[in-house]
Length: 129
Length: 370
Image (cartoon, rainbow over all chains, first blue to last red; front, side):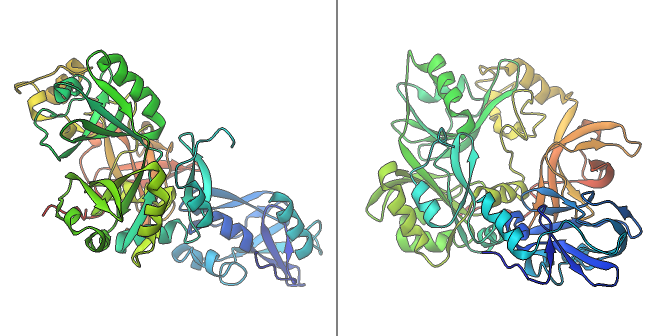
């Protein structure tokens, strides 16, 4: 059973979004995603300043087993990336909702749309199983 | 998944919480709840137990078995002492590699362990060539690998006699009430044992080993990163029908007596091509070890290019090496770049990542040589 904080919003592609309510959000991958990936050994971070559309590929996360693409759950501009992951990519496994965050984005619009709450995301996981 | 075969340990894998994947026609554990990286580290530091029952175990018996097998395998098998094990290759008439295998002189027969994905074809190859003179039979046995620096401590408690084997020796022992065949070998670069057990006794035997405090069950994921760090080839990836033993860096698998000037020179499929390459060294490409500077893993299939971006080769195995903390790979490069410290570039997601040609194994082997 994976951990799904209620204050976050989720994409079906297994990213989470923390809305800071000031037009910016933090993005990472869910506990479910890090468990499925296994031991993360590398995160290819986006460039600060990159403009992302919703659903756009913005990076890659690699575990010992395989590489997985990351998809942006929001549209906006990358304003910060978690450089600590370059030296400690395993933080994504250890603390997916805290130290393992991946990027901060300034939203193109005022609101985040079309994302799931914890229960709805959990339902997509249950449907997979 | 219904058409996938199962090993005698299938139920035990499920009970241990393994994640099962299709591999070489079998449903196999890729990892247990510990995870690939910790399983890898556990094997390097303590002791891991691997189910390798999917591999083919074959007995060949009859008169002059060694001579007969030498017609298919370029190793020195006539010179293989009773109770000794040797690495071998089945070669094709074109000089390619049909499969790699372990060969044991078991006294009254020769015992072969071949790759799971190749075993039907290997059996057909043996029968086609040897069946009129020799008995070729598949053995209904499980195969377990107990690997790591503490494997000997575990074996010491269960069967001290088996600890007297040195690397690449083989013997029959009774362990936990079972007659087992043990060889001091493996596929991790560590000291350890490979243990062949009757299929119906395999599960109880594996549980007995797992009850030892040093032992954890290890899946195929860690098996792959362990063998890669140890510089060991994986058939179908690092060599195949289109690769000669010389290109694959496996000249050592061609016994001295089988080479030009030896007592039994040639006499195996593709000998003309292979022995020419052994002498002339005029092959164009060579398998090498590659270490990356950065952290991005370089995986199988990645193109290798020179600084200008011209394609020069390909990565045939690649992953993150948990014990060396860096991406580690092997691949083929032009012969002029086979020297250590040559720099090549791997193309990963459109970027050229520098990789340095590095002698293998990447980790110091722990083989017990007495």
